[in-house]
Image (tube, rainbow, N blue to C red):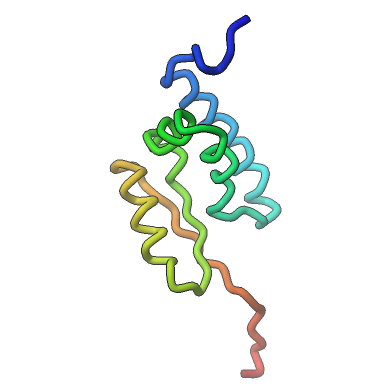
Amino acid sequence: MVTERFLPPELLSLVFAAVYNDSKDKAKSMMARTSYELVDTLLVCRRWKDIAYQTAELWTTVYVAHDPDASVRAQTYANRARGLEIDIIVTALKKFSSEN
């Protein structure tokens, strides 16, 4: 039996990117996606975390809200995207009224 420990990093990277992009496409229409969705993958084990950090495609969309860490998170994603274009999606925490 072959376990994920024996899969080459390049193959795991492709799997991560395929799963991430599939969920990204589905979530776009739902507007429910956050930058923290990678956490589950990063927490599995050190090897998965290292591979995910090196998979530039995983870091091409960053969702930010009005929080003090937004610019740091965006810069981290840009660094990990290693030259790929990134999308920065700014979300509001509450709806604004046109009466204000």
